[in-house]
Structure formats: structure tokens, C-alpha cells
Length: 254
Image (cartoon, rainbow, N blue to C red; front, side):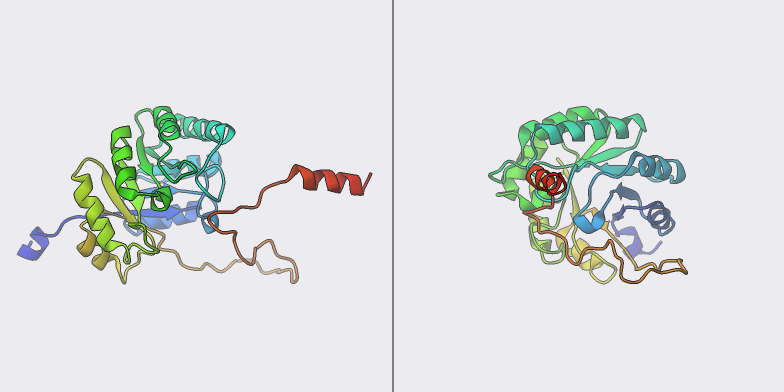
């Protein structure tokens, strides 16, 4: 080992995946940990129990499960918190390594009560606070709140559109954390910019999608029918069932 290799700091690569083939590919490529999600095109939601179990049985690296009951913002009511507690219990029963959570108040602060409830539900599993952190009103205040809550790490771009653009902020968060909580850099990280992100920020872990388009194996293809949306809703809106709309439909056929 030469001097350059000896002085090189090992950086853990966490791969964000939403399918069994992606999980296996990430491990094959050398990922050190998986964040398992559903619906990544919507920013990620809790994956199915079947996917969690299948991935957990097939891979040898740690698996963290995203706990997010829906797309949209990170302001949750009591029913949604109940859903998250149940999902954490299901993940815990499967003995996965960790969960990834996040919740904010309407004013953009860490929702202390909700995060405490979710962390208690996680028991001995590791807990990562996800990129809800980047939507917080004050990241320095939010980081101290998460440290006080005993969260293990926070996934963040430094509050920027990408981790590369937020590298200076990430470096500031690393200094503030001072080993009390892990800083996991994420947001547009790829092979072209990862070395610069690590060098400029000083993080010891990076979160990547590392995705490529996969062509369908289907021979028969139906033209004119699609389930794909032209565009996803924004961060501060979502598509949800409306009782009024359901009533109108029922009335239309009464």
C-alpha cells in the first residue's frame, strides 16, 4: 500500500433502491448499505413487506427501510404517524438493520414528538433522518434537535438542489456534528462528482441512486394506453382521494 492509499479515508456508499433487481445490482457493484424504498419517482415511500423480506433474504449488506406513508410534504397527522409506527413494527419484525424517517412541523422545524415516537418504535434499529432535513427552516437548529433525539445520521444535500452545490454547507454540518451524528451526503451524486463532494464536504458516507434505464422485455406492447404520469406533483402538493369527488361520481350514476 502506497502513502496515498494509506491516507485515503474509506467512504461508505449507500444505494437507494426500489426493486429486488436494483438491490442485487447495488450489492454486486460494491454498495455498503441499501436504502430500500417504493415509488422513487415520487421521492420515495415505504416499500411493500414482500419487497423488504425478499431483499433482506438475498443480500448480505445492511438494509435500511424508508418509512414514509405518502408523497408530498413531511407534515403528518395522527393517522399517518400511526401508519408509520405500524410500518416500523413490520420492518423491525423482519430484523432489518435500520429505518429512515422524517417529520416536520408546519413551521419547518423538526417535529420532536413525532420523531421521538418513531425512534422509540424503532428500538435498537439504526435511525436515519431523511431529506426532510433539507426542507427545515433552520438546518443548524434541526441538526441539534436530531442529536438530542439520538438519531444516528441525517441524509442531506446541505439544503441545496444537489450535494455538489451544497458541499460547503455539508462541510459546515460535518463540523457542527463533530461526531455526534453522521452526515450522509445525498442529492445528484454520481461518478463524475462524488470525489469532489467528498473532498469538499468531508463526509464519510454518500447516498446514490446510480440508476440506468432498463428496457422492458415485453414483446407485445399496447399502444395508446399508459399508466405513467406526464409530471409528478410538487413537493408542497400531492394527489389524494377526495370524499367530495367520490360523492359526485356516486351521484352521477344514482
